[in-house]
Structure formats: structure tokens, C-alpha cells
Image 1 (cartoon, helix red, strand yellow):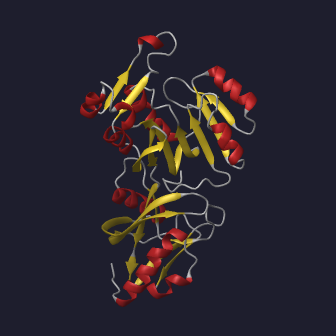
Image 2 (image 1 turned 60 degrees about the vertical axis):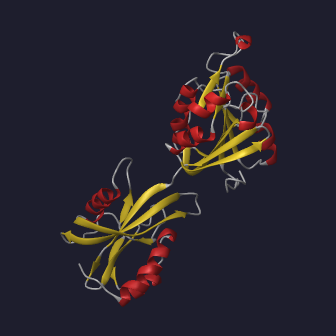
Length: 323
């Protein structure tokens, strides 16, 4: 966790995926008693033992295939020790998007894998190098372990590519867990778009309602980008919904990631609105105000907007633009 720059804070929710009899969760739960620990496994007997033997943690039985019995965005951290070392490629690829589903934006996923040190001397080594993945079945284990739970060897390039399809900031740590490597990935935060609308030297800003999230904080109009939605299209939609205008979205002015104290993470994108049809009306805020750039720092803006406020208050008062 330290290697992936993740801090396990009090109240965080963590899932031990494929926890078995809780051999790692047992020690973590003792060391971090204020963390909300969860474990899941296909083995009903093991889960029943965990429920009786590991107080303070929550356990659930999962199927051989997705879904998990948890709602989306449930966990800050998911780890799987000696699980992806035994799953077939088909099962691994099926579980990755499901693990992403139950991971919160900004959350971390940690998977242990057989290191090169384990498989490089085996006869499968050339196949791992060539194909990226080898699933070895053993006649000795027939009747003891199911066919989908044998021994999996995969290259660093293979697992990084698979994770990169669903996660951001994928890193690979060699021999981080004895003879097992660790693949670490982060679920990207939500994409949020905001509009820079200027008229007669003044910028449009909006105040959130008292009863909502971040009450009475000021922000630029905009909102969340839906799955598969183009950011500019999302901003046009948000401006129709919030202000009743049909906006023409110009250049991206700034983009950066932000983390709020409540754990919410987002990538903020600010766009210049080059033109808009219709008079902006307050359809979703406590109030909207046209303000001169030099006075923007006087408002109590959302933490995520402060960097942009500082930037435009300096630049735009020197070179005011009008729509």
C-alpha cells in the first residue's frame, strides 16, 4: 500500500477478494481496527469460519463469476493475495471490470502474481514470454481443485495491459510479496466539466443550494460527465439543464485532478464558452452572479475550483474578453 501511495485511513472500506480463511485479513483487522474490513470467497465453508472467528469484519460468498454481492463504489481498497496466481485468463479478465465496479473513484486495487523468478526456469517460460499468459493444470490436483483454479503464470506486460483497460495509474512492483509480484491500479475519479462564461468583462459564477453537498459554496457552472459521454457534449448538456442556454464550447483552459476531504476524487476540466444563445437563468442554484475577475477570490469557492479561480483572476483582469 505504501508503494502505491495509498494511506489506509480510519473508516476506509477494504475488500479482501478471495479471502479464503482470512489468513491476511485476520492480521490486518487487528492492526487497523478502525477500518471497515470485508472478505469474499467462493468457499462457503471458509466464509462461515471467518464469520465465527474474525470479529468486526463482514464476509460474503461470491459466485465463480461476477457479480459480487456489493453495490458499486463500495470500497477504498481491494486486494487479492494468491488469487490471480490460480485463476484462468478467462476468469481473470471477467473479474477485472467487476472489481472496478465496486471500487470507489480514486480507490486502489492490489493483485499478487507469480513473479518471473517463479516461472522463468519452468518449461512454460517461453510460452509466457510469447503469449503473455499460461494456465497450467495438474493431474495431481484433479478432483481436489476445480479446473478453473490451478496455476497461472503471466508476464508483466500482460497484466499491465489488462488492468489498463479498466484502471488508471497501473504500476508493477517486482518481488514485493516474497516470490509474488504486485500489480497496483487506481480507479480514475469522476470527470467533471466546468464553463468559463464571460460577458462585458464579468464571469458567471454560481452558488450551491444550502441543502445539498458542499452547501452554499461557489463554483463555475457544469457537472459530471456521464459514462461514454464526450466532455464538451456533457458541458453543453449541463448548461442547458442549469442555465437554460445553448452554449458553444471552445478550448480547454485547464485540467487537473482534485481530492476533497470527504474522499471524493475528480478530474476537473475547464472550458471557455465562446458563445451562448439565450439569457442564463438560475435553474439549479441558490443564486448566480456575474462578477469581475479580480473579485473572484473574495468568494467561498469549492476547493477544486480555487486553483482555476486564482489563475483566471490574474489573467482575465489583465486581458478581459467578451462573448
